[in-house]
Amino acid sequence: MSAGGRKSGLIPFEAASGFLMLLIVAAMSFLACFALAGSLGTTRVANSWTDGLAGAATVRISAGEEDRARRVSLALDILRETPGVLDARPLSEADVAQLLTPWFGSTPQIGELPTPSIITVKLDPDMEPDPEIVQARLDGASSGAVYDDHGRWRNRAASAARAVGGLSLWALGFAVLAIAAVVYLVVSIAMAAHKNTISALRLAGAEDRFVAGVYQKRFFWLGLLGGLLGAVLALVAFLGMDALSSVTSALPGIEPPAYWPFVMGAVVLSAGLVALLSARVAVLTTLRRRA
Amino acid sequence: MILFENVGFRYGRGPEVLQGLNLEIPAGSFQFLTGASGAGKSSLLKMLYLDEKPTSGRISLFGRDVTTLTRDEIAWFRRRIGVVFQDFRLLDHLTAAENVALPLTVAGARESAYRDNVAEMLQWVGLGDKMSVRPPELSGGEKQRVAIARAVVASPDIILADEPTGSVDPEMAERIMSLFMEMNRLGKTILFASHDLAMIERFKMPIMSLHDGTISATAGARA
Image (tube, rainbow over all chains, first blue to last red; front, side, top):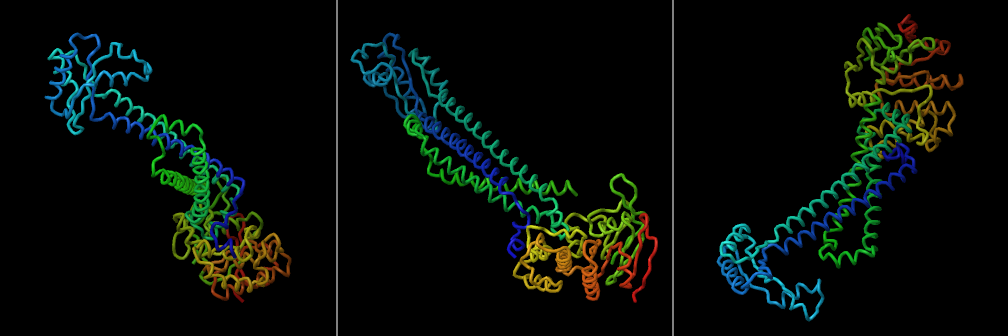
């Protein structure tokens, strides 16, 4: 008396539609993993960039300015007296030349180029000075120095990370919606195909939630299986992607975080839960519509 | 037990199938319901197993107005009503035993708790050796007996039969009738719809005749 004992066996289910749903859920789970990886990776890279720039500022005195040694000394005095500045020191000509190496190569003539004087400033991260006030003080002393706390760059990096994160959330949302829609459709078709069976169950005293339970259970497992398939394929794609090593070497910090397996687990579980909820809604609305 | 008060019924905007119907069927009674095809027998039964609602009037079962039940309450009431149809309405993908167990399964009973009861029911209808057989492999009479076992397995208070002997030969019809009589002796209220007057008259039970949507006559007191 197996099928009667198992609720799930009471209503037949076509393997073909289950397989089709499995494929779609797997594809959506695959995309969700990539969207999440993109979002998390971008956020981590942006954070590492902005964290690296936080607590630091640069002061630049143009190469064209006369009497640069005096101007540098003046700027250093002002900076060292500014609250929130922990340290300020000028870069040597060799340091500046090294900074330019990526653009000009390591030619001996680089020292002959008109390079600006640069002062690196270490700031108290808990009490960073207002850049406008610092600039005003430097201007007041006619130092000709330009103060840059990298705020503009940090803001750009943060907004770029937010934009990518937002896009990833949209992609995730669409993946969830697609899973919900396909489950709703498959359940509706399955219920139409087995209308008489469901009617017999109802006449035997089955409540709507009993019928919903039969479908929920089945589609939860199908969703979970599809989600797992998609996540495993995403993992294989991540690991097997030739470009991954070049991406990680170009963008240190984009490597998958240690908690990545849990994120993928959450994607798999979410696929199952979305399928379950969508199946429940499909059954209850269909039964009420028929009543 | 069953009370109809001025009940009218129509499908959609069609003509009235039943009109001004008043009837009372006491608990534990056996009542034949007869009438020509289209007289409204099936519609009356559909309202009793809560598949349709009257368009006017009031129906009470077990002292409760059933025209205002919620979907969950309907399910609960249906567990107290067993139904046997002319077309059996068995599930072909389930075995005979699984079909019989259906009302118990949907009520949430465990298979271990009802396995013996189901076997006993199939023995009672003479199909103890067909427990694992699926309906497509059963004859019409066997299917109907499985349907009867399904209707009574949860020990309902009311059993409704809609032309249950319509698809079987006379010998099997007699056998099926005797099962209904036995259920009635066990205290079940039986409402048995049939247009086979010859068979009905042999059993000398109260007869209610439907004609053009109203009860035209009642006859045949308990012998």
